[in-house]
Structures are given as C-alpha cells and as structure tokens.
Figure (cartoon, rainbow, N blue to C red):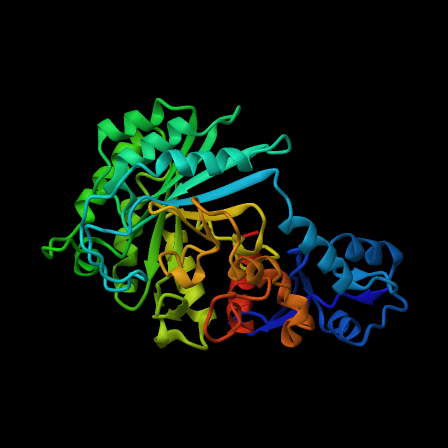
Length: 416
C-alpha cells in the first residue's frame, strides 16, 4: 500500500486543541489523524498498522495499491466523464443587455435594446439534434445580460425543444423583471424550474451596489421576487456575495433570510469576483488574501447563528467547468455558439454558428485540453478539484490555493 498522491494534510492551531486533518481531493474523504499516522502517510510506512484500518483507508481513497498509477486512473475518469452525453447542458443568452449597472459585472455596460427572438427555432433545432437515445436529462440555463429582457425567446425556445422527459430549466436573473404572468407561463410547460438570484448584503449595502440605470436600488424588488417564487414552490438559490462592504450587514441579511429558507429555498455564500477583461477572474477580498480560514470561519459562524446551512460543498469536479466537455454549449441570441459563458460575445472564442456548424480551431482548443499535459498540474494534489484551471484565463493561475482548501476542509469537517 502507498499514500494517495491526492492527499492533502493540514494542521490547525485551535484555542482548545490542535488538530490534523487529511483530505483526499479525488475521493473527497476527510479524516482526522494523529502525528504518528501523519508521519506514516508522508513516509509511506504502513508496517504494523491493523489490516482492518488499512482496508478502511483504502476504501475511502486515502491509501491505494502500490501498483496503481493514479495519474492513469485520473486520466481515465477525466476522459470518460468529459465525453458523456447522458446529461446535456445548454446555456442560452437571450440578450447581452441589462437593466442594471452593477459595478462588478464581467460583461461591462450594454445598452438596452430590443432583441430578436427569431433565433429560438434555430437554437431548438441545435439542441434537438444533440439529444440522442442515451440522453437522460437536458438542462437549459438562461443567463444574460438580464435574460428576462427577452421573455419571448425563452418561451418560444422551451416550446420548440423535443425531449420525452421534463426539461431542467435554470434561470439566473437579477430578480427585477420576474412577474406572475411570466412565471405562470413557465410553470405551464413540461419543465422542472429553478432560479438563482443574488444579494450583495442587506438593503442599504445591496442598494449601493446593485442598482438600476437611474441609480435606484433593487433589494425590495428582489425580495418580492423571492416571495413570488416561494409561493409557487420554485426551487431557488440565493447567492450572497461576500466582500468588505457586505460583511458588516451579513448578520442582518441572514436573519431576514432565515424566515424564508425551506426545502425550496437555499442560500450560499460566494466571494465577490469580477470577470474583468472578459476572461480573467479577480478577487475583491484583498483584505483577507492569505487569511482565508479567518474569513471562511467568520462567514460560516454567521450562517450558523442565523440557522442557515451554507450549501457550498468541496467536491472533486475533474473539470474547471463544462467548457471542456462534449455535453455543454453556450448559445447566444445571435446564433453564435461558445464553450464558455464568460467569453460569450467575444467572437474570437466562438466555436461555430448555428448557420455554419463547422468547428473553428478554438473548438479543438477546448475539446483537446488535457491538464495532465501541464507540468505543474500533472503532479499537483489539487488537480481533481480544479481540473487544470480556466482554459481562457490570460494567466494560468491556480483556481485553488492551499489556504483556500484548508479553510474549506476545516468548515466541512466541523459541520460533518
């Protein structure tokens, strides 16, 4: 037996007692170990350890057979999963326009304009041709801009997709344009609907960040939409942005949300990021750089105090995102097809169009991507978490650093 190359060992200094946690990024197993087992893991010396303990460590992926090449094992899983087509994911952008002017929006300013919906049949034809006998589920996600500025395209498209099972429909909206009439029109269709909305803090903080073009805040309108979705039992994810501005109002916001969270409504915290220059992420939480455990514990304690479970999880995902898989495409209202929503609209990254489905060279950049060909990824224990990172990032920075994972492992172990 040998220690898995995907083990990470973290030591924590606590007010009451110190602890050592071992996290395997491939199996997502977390166990507490003592100093002796830590030394054995690091030296690959398992002599004298009870066989039943070794078998359990092997079951959860902490130790593996000597003959197992874990890179080959990872490569097998990576290639198998990326080529699956039993579950298809289509992200549709009905418009790049938005009725808000959030300062951190990765798409930058877009003027309001009427958008054509005549591409809906072409989008539906593309989706229908992708659906095969092996397809068990189809998810159609709508993003923008603000997708509800083009409700007609959304409804026309959903009417035109041919699939025997209910479609999984996910609408990411700013929450200011959802109304009873449109929601009823959605719910009348053969779909399973979920929505995602974002809050940037409690009312005063949120209304200083997420504003309309006339400067008016949007908090009350979003909460009205939350009530509407809750009334109709639409599964809703509320994303709470975490940054220096939102942290002081987090307690009051979570107290407010604690009265509406149920089996149809969940809340999760997310660092506020900006996708600036169209293809690079930048953290806004500079104050907490290098001290993620402090930030993560503070946020988690605030969630606990309000009686809300933070639903974000630390799990192996093999790919940085669906862009490198055969099952995920991004289609905009112009009929352009991309693999990544962040670069949608930038025709340099267009992989083909609905009028001409001959792939561009960019398509093969995505579909030929293999993190095991990247030197620093090939030997990295964090590879199963990030899948090699963002393919379109200008600088190949790691999606995860040890401090970030250490903080997330700490919280997950405490909440087990």
